[in-house]
Length: 395
Ligand SMILES: Cc1ncc(COP(=O)(O)O)c(C=O)c1O
Image (cartoon, rainbow, N blue to C red; front, side):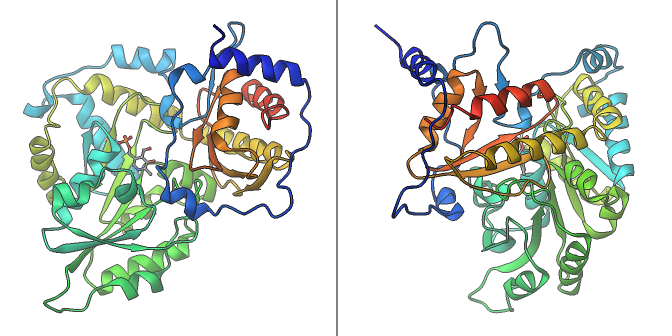
């Protein structure tokens, strides 16, 4: 019996060339917010993807899919290690100190994931019956399993941002007045770049204005910096200056920087000490983690400047998408994420299956929305292959 993927390949081959589809009369425009109401990531079953044996898979689902380069692996194998729960792993200590120094903060805590660094930071800054201010599609709220309620017993004030970006006025208006009916506002949390906003970056003046509001209200400011280096490279802002605005920063090494595992939570020495106890309670105290920290150090030293290449490739993909008749809208890429909307007669699931049959994976972001992410394992030849595949992927 012919499998689903085989049938798709036949269909793509039989069509040869793309024939224009378009929205058609009376087509309804799905909004980006509608995508949010859906499950977020719509993963296709594994057998929906079929790579030609001659061509390697191109995985545009996320920048988390990269594998360590040979040079990174060599750094990992050669790392001096010890038991990090005894604070005896020199490579972990070096990574924590180096990351903190870059951002002008006192100390760092190496953790397995960005979810853990965010959730530990939120727990350290809040208590039950308090409230966190964040954007309504923030990763800490939307994609961390409701962890704020579960771990911290805190409420969340969700604000609608422009591609994930909040304004100082919005934050100021969301701070709760003292009243027995309300939770107590305890934390402002920003995300830069913003994942659901399509890799959008904050302007420096806007960060300064929000930090000013937080200071005036005595609120700490946390940054989910899963892709903070993408923001720094794209805007030319300085990492060290971030330490003057943020009380805590979660920096991911396993996204655009290409390390296999790990995030570092930064803050004052006292804050990080508190977080270290929380990490132990979360089960995140680890032993010879220096092998992983060595990958992070290698990434910090060698993979930051090259993020500009990912950004250029994302811009190139956005241009190719904008030329396709079945693409209704492309959010202008600011970094390495490209989010786009397909016309209603081109459902995202069908589009992703057609790309999958051509050996290209991407993420669905709702019924009509799709996300492409460029990273270390996507080179110019890969982008050219995606550009060619887009000519037939509309159906
Ligand atoms: C903005 C943002 N924050 C946090 C995370 C969580 O990182 P992790 O997957 O390491 O838990 C992600 C993951 O993609 C993310 O995009």
